[in-house]
Length: 152
Image (cartoon, rainbow, N blue to C red; front, top):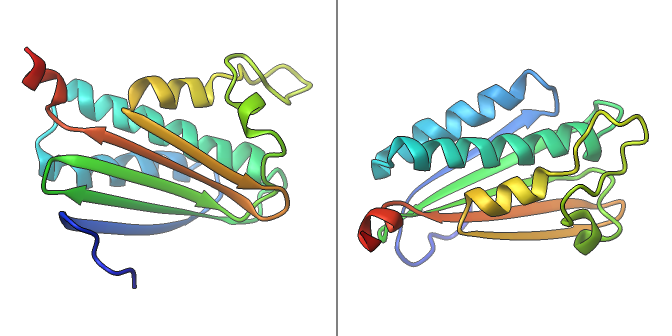
């Protein structure tokens, strides 16, 4: 069990098989957990979309043969910040900077748009991606709930 971080008020740890049917489970679980911070409908939709992209990346790219697990940690902080970490032990990304470029895809068939990281980055306040080939990838995203309302 991880040591509680400064300002942390609650934590969710979830492990799911890397199956496409679990993308919706991940979205729903994270959204329900984040509801404790009373996000707006837009903020909740942003978080759900970013989670969907990250989990889909694990399913499609990290585990192309369908074997593996996706680890999701959601941490709620007293300042109404949400941190979502999605981790896999899949094939990893050889060039993270290139993979984060809009429209970049390794999909030779043309079914993928190459916009996953761009979507995550636009819907969350911060996105950090770490990866090692053969070891897996960690995507850490943060969003401050009520940040837009506070600016108005």
